[in-house]
Image 1 (tube, rainbow, N blue to C red):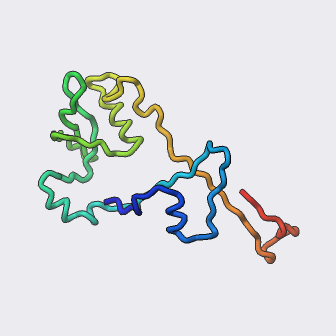
Image 2: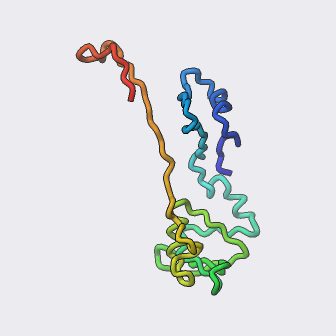
Image 3: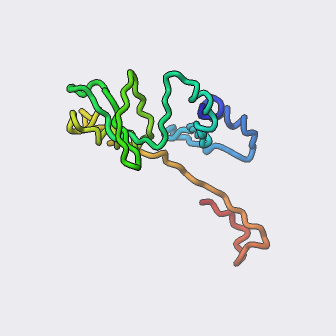
Length: 164
């Protein structure tokens, strides 16, 4: 549904798949750093790509421009009873379901859980004070090698290969 590549996360597989002999992995001899593969989908516009399936689904109701404001629970804060919804124009309503899926992203999931504090004062699901606490982004390392063409070089630096 997200239009990702193959369900394979082995670096050697992707080295062969891209067929780029100029791309080499860094040799990490200590074993403390390892290569991993992440896959990011292109921006899939579900309303365009899956419009027919969404319209035909008996148990799916699509609500555009409706924001989850609060997760309501039972008195023990163990079961979600409804989600309070609001629109930018001020309309408010609730949604009840047998099952709920919280899929609003790393930051927004934590924000919604923490702000849903009507029953548990620390926020829904935050009994150990850990919701959002260890959030981190995906660190990236950018590296490049620049070889200046002779006609672009200044001050006779064209013999030097720069590594950043």
